[in-house]
Amino acid sequence: METHPKKRIDLIIEMPLLRRVTERFDKAGVTGYSVLPVIAGRGSSGPWAADGQVGGFGQMAAVVCIVDAARVDAVLEEVFAVVKRQIGFITVSDVAVIRPERF
Image (cartoon, rainbow, N blue to C red; front, side, top):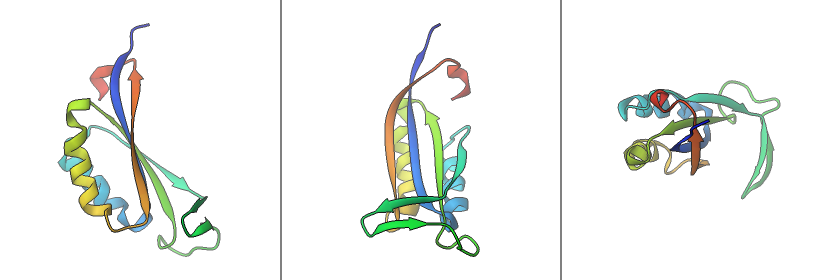
């Protein structure tokens, strides 16, 4: 089966930033993304867990999208403007997709 190279952008962000980040994805022309809850982890300040948190504060979300390599910088500029001073991280990796018209 033929595959096509793309870029995957993963963000781990604080839940209150989610709406602003997805709006930036829309502005950058990202055609789709997935949002997943992050229930626990370990960062520079040590381990943490979402257990017992009320509302969105203290909770984290993972946001994943796949884009053409030519669009990565534009997408990153949009979302980094929102998250640069916040807890979390952004990664970019190479992926291969089967249906390139979807991204």
